[in-house]
Image (cartoon, rainbow, N blue to C red; front, side, top):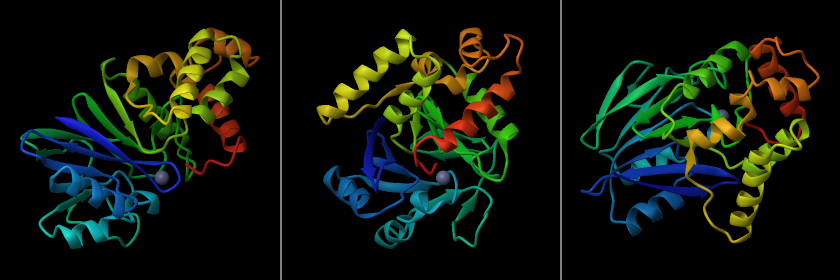
Length: 255
Ligand SMILES: [Zn+2]
C-alpha cells in the first residue's frame, strides 16, 4: 500500500492511498484539480472517496472527481447538511476497499458526526488531530473531542496519523508557551522548520512521536500541569479544555 498526499488550498492535506494494482481511495478532497492531476500522473484507478466531515475544505472537490470518474463510491458520515453522498457510514462499520477492511471510527468533537478511517497503520483522522495539535471544537463538544483524542492515543505506537491540515509549526509555538524547556518540542520544532525551509514533506506523523510532542495527548502530564500553574491532581479533561480554548485565541487557524 502506498500513501501520497496533495497539499491543496491553503494548508489542506488530501490523502491518496493506492495498492499494487493502482486502485486508489481519496480522503477529504477539498479541491479536485491537483487530485485529478496526481491520479493521471500516477495512472491510478479511483475506487472511492472517504469523507470525515462536511466542511467545504474537505468536500469541495468531490463533485468534479465523481464527474470525471463516475464509478467512484463516496462514503461519509451522517449528513449534517444537504450534501449528496452514496453511502453513509458510522463508527463500527467496515468498508471493504483495496482488498482490505477499513474500520470506520467515530471521532466526534470537531463536528458532531465526525468520523475517521483506519487501515493499519494509516489513521485518517480529518480535523480531529494535527501534528502537535488537535482540531477546533465546534458546537461545544469538548467532552466528545477529549474522548476522541484519548481513543486515538490508545492506538498502536506505529500508527501513522493522516491529518487534514499542516499546522505543525504554529501548534509547536503554541505548545512551547507552556513548555519552553521541553527538549522533544524544541528538537521537533527545529526538524520541522528545516524541512519546511527545504520544501520537504514533513510527513509521516507517527503516533509514538505525537505522544511526546502533542500537548493534547499529554493532558495528564505532571510537568505540563505544573508549568500551566495547576496542581498535579487537576483533571485531565479540564487541562484539555483550557488548552483548546487558549488555542482558539492563538493565531487565526480556523480548524
Ligand atoms: Zn473541519
